[in-house]
Image 1 (cartoon, rainbow, N blue to C red):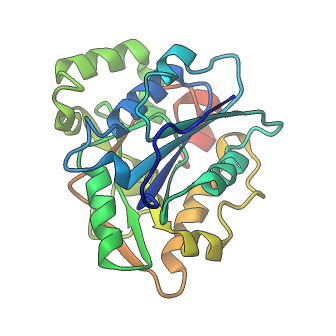
Image 2 (image 1 turned 90 degrees about the horizontal axis):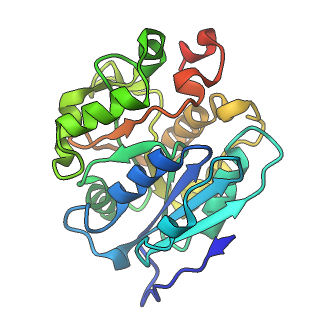
Length: 266
């Protein structure tokens, strides 16, 4: 199933945001809402497109909801024989119309309203910009730890309700903690970003996501992609400290989908 793009762009969009989805229909719904131009501040829908790539599973996004998405969204349903998102990442990037490609390997991460505008500004500042957004976990401790204390969907719903999300989008900061990859703050290197944007030339130059990462959830594929993008010759790294991506519980690698020793490494 592929939802055909309705919007006719008068020119190539400046950025294509690729969101990978697997067994997270409710969380992906929140993520897509946070990427709409009505939620995002100071952006024109002609400037960006969102490509949702969902690997088939027993728990898919609701087709009736997909039909309500804005016209600068595309939805692609695909079959996958391996437990990794890597192939979906590369497939989504190949569909991109934008001058730049932003990869969100975990579709369960909501973003704050200044993310798209900040990505666009950074790409205007440098033709080979690599732009990253810090990551957070909803809750007062990392979710890979919180799940052992009973953290789950109901806990998370109560937290979101407590800050009146989505009407109060920046309230997410008050109910979250930095992810392990970003816990050292903004002035020391991060390990990864779930909102990682680069030019099409940079994406092609580093060869996209490495298909050798074929473990469940992709293992360290996103960390590897981040490292290769930031170290690619000629790039300029921009970090957006005032915005964030916020991980939602969905029973994936971070929140219990693999052995605890693996979770603790993420």
